[in-house]
Length: 172
Image (cartoon, rainbow, N blue to C red; front, side, top):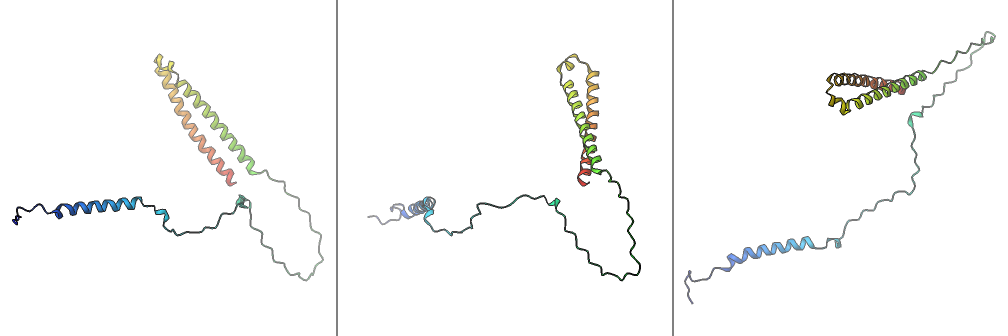
């Protein structure tokens, strides 16, 4: 046997150690990724079951009013004059409810908005007609475009008036 340094085969530890380390790491990763973890013990939390029937109903809170406080009773005073008969006061006539006027205003505003929407749909139908453009009648197109712009401005104003009337009615 030759004892020369140059005659020795390549040291196996230089080649085999990295290969073995890589194989070992890959094997461990495969094991941990494929192992059945469902067998391990889990911490169990018990939750109280929900009731089968819930006795609840929706209630409109705006209908409730606080109970009036009882008035303190006054002590009777010593009478010095004889009690006279009370004079009957005429009952005032019931005033018309202000909400009736507000409801009428809301109805008028709604009718105004519906009328303007019909006008807008009519103008859109006319402007959507292909024959109008094929004729090349620019004056007619311009006229209907201006009318549509006016109707849209009126519709915007009518909707804002309608919303204000609805808010007054709700407050009212």
